[in-house]
Length: 317
Ligand SMILES: Cc1ncc(COP(=O)(O)O)c(C=O)c1O
Image 1 (cartoon, rainbow, N blue to C red):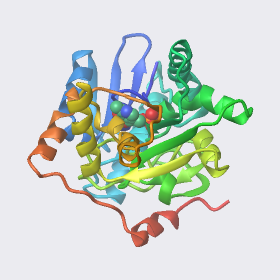
Image 2 (cartoon, rainbow, N blue to C red):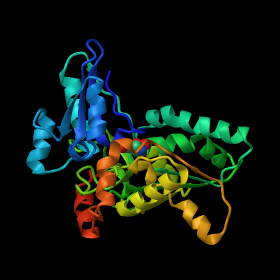
Image 3 (cartoon, rainbow, N blue to C red):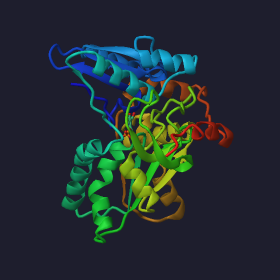
Image 4 (tube, rainbow, N blue to C red):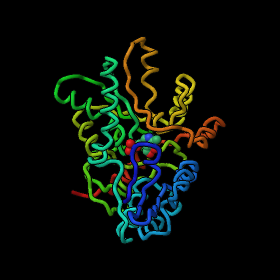
């Protein structure tokens, strides 16, 4: 069986191909995450996976990506292409996409169903539902039952996707058909995208490194049923630190993209029930926290000109 997890600790970091028969599991981990998130890598190796930084010279598509983008630090789109190649060229191996696509959001809807059951049990009505969005699977799952109510006119919620300013597919991408992976071996999907060739700057530590956005979320956003904002990574880590000090929980950098709205309520004095998707622990990300604490973390926001180069390469329909 092969899988690439979307929500949880690993989504923007890896893509993997596993064999049913001998439990051999080959993980392609985005090269920059491989280096910046060594503890995530070591957890996988502890559970017997072989972990290869992607793009790698071990696959044909990896070699092609490296020839086209010398020195690239990789992206989820590259890791997907490599894992798919391994799955289709090795008998007994399978690959199952773990973020972005509809069936994954359906699977992740257990997050939203449990959240809704808990809120109903305590008689709490959410005003706002907010979560980080890389490929969109954890957010799609979290909002599913609430969006259902909204669409049926039974309740209204403000729903906000938060993405990195360095990989802003919702807020600066276009709604178009694009490849789900950098090697262009996967099918096209209609989604908000920066272009399948887009690779976020290597200094970006907070994951969520996917060029596109789930087609379901893209449609909801395009229909005006949800909002999206992007945040700089230094602001993300500032919010993470504050959350840890107030709540006692050290959040994953990905989750921390979504920790801002409470501060706005504090400023305006409004009392609101904010549901926020805490998608992972930060204990595997202490290298990034260390960089932030040492003042070595920088922001990189792509310019309009840079984004236009990738947009021009979108498949023509
Ligand atoms: C901890 C964590 N949370 C959230 C995500 C977001 O992924 P998605 O938008 O596909 O749910 C990731 C992806 O890398 C992650 O590692």
